[in-house]
Image (cartoon, rainbow, N blue to C red; front, top):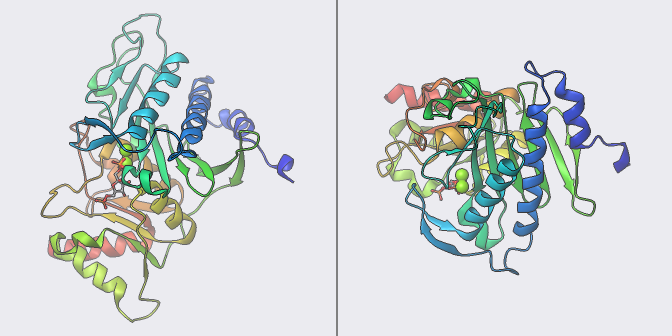
Length: 335
Ligand SMILES: O=P(O)(O)OC[C@H]1O[C@](O)(COP(=O)(O)O)[C@@H](O)[C@@H]1O
Ligand SMILES: [Mg+2]
Ligand SMILES: [Mg+2]
């Protein structure tokens, strides 16, 4: 049965032709991400047994205490991509500034930059709740063989050539898009192979799940409060079910399969919310749209937002199309 399923490696080669700029470079890049994901997965699966849980003792540019697994995952992804000489630059949640990879070498013809959230859902690492990795890939905009600049990273989400995530949960899955739909691959840990288990993933247009940290409710804008009340009302197919794992990747993944909306609004303590535009919201927005879903900041399509800083945050509403449009309606009534 398993041997009938297509492996990720086979899928990448088979779909290489469908990619506009096909040169094999993007395929090699996704293969490198696959390898780094397996290395990190191996460590995540034995968190608690080895000295990989708890804080690493440093604070990242977000002002968050870095977890040991944040640092480990960051190192493994950067090392894997650097060693394979497959990108010209990397930006990460755990790095203050972007990392140029041999880009000053005029022979460096690598045309892609990668932006990553190496470990998403850090607050769940120590409590054995699923976490993830998020990645976003762009073609550089500055000339090949010249040093990458911030311009290469501050591109609108609608310029992404690929995006995806890995979820380290009850099973480990890699889910990604190159602009031709969204496909999910499950890792068979016994043989270390990802198999196509979820072809052509689609958000149901409507859902019955809402995911938001209601602990911040009193600080939310009135429109968001009204939408949460709307979700809880005994009317029609409501009330909806509240589900919040606290790992964006896992909440998104569940909502894509079952139908639902994930919300991280701005609130009086965080005027732009918490999530980072470049390596959390843009890649999830690309996946959502490729899976017939929607993603906005309550007003503007996430992928049309002009980035101004590497670590900027934006309010984020993402999931089943009709649910995102409904919350936008409530928000825009008040703003
Ligand atoms: O604890 P809060 O404020 O609800 O935030 C949870 C959100 O923050 C995040 O953990 C942020 O991501 P990181 O763990 O990568 O910093 C999301 O995965 C999650 O949805
Ligand atoms: Mg994150
Ligand atoms: Mg993170």
